[in-house]
Image 1 (cartoon, rainbow, N blue to C red):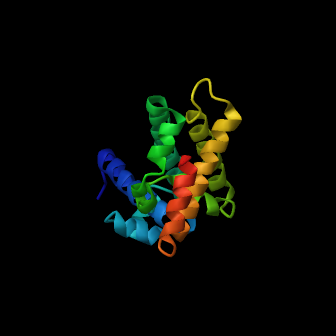
Image 2 (cartoon, rainbow, N blue to C red):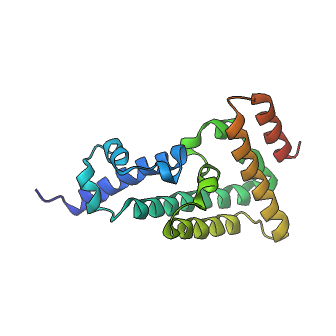
Image 3 (cartoon, rainbow, N blue to C red):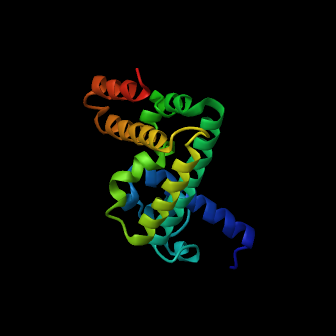
Length: 178
């Protein structure tokens, strides 16, 4: 039975939504075709009507996730400045909500070990994200350093939050500039 173009597009979006959540929760290596397709309510075989490989899926998901994050950073920095963005970025809910949070903090530590197309998608997305996060009139090096500190603090706080909540909170406060 032939699937309509509209239904195929809906299926692709469902696959990308599940893969995006799994990317953040489990990292690029944890995005398995079978789990993605089951989560999207489809069979494993249907995957290849949308993507040629898990690697292609991961590159597309990273591109999409970083594009969304770029829109977020651009809006918040435009509305509240870099320091206002820092307060939003390091909210306690962001610490807990890995599945919908920053894809950079969720994946950065694994990207170097991924195939070239995934690393390329991440590099482009990261560049766009950082460019969008530099307010006009702000020294580029200062803004880049600030973003690196925010992302690093979130990565470290998430890594230890369930074992040393006090230190995790201290890291977030320090990165906020308190």
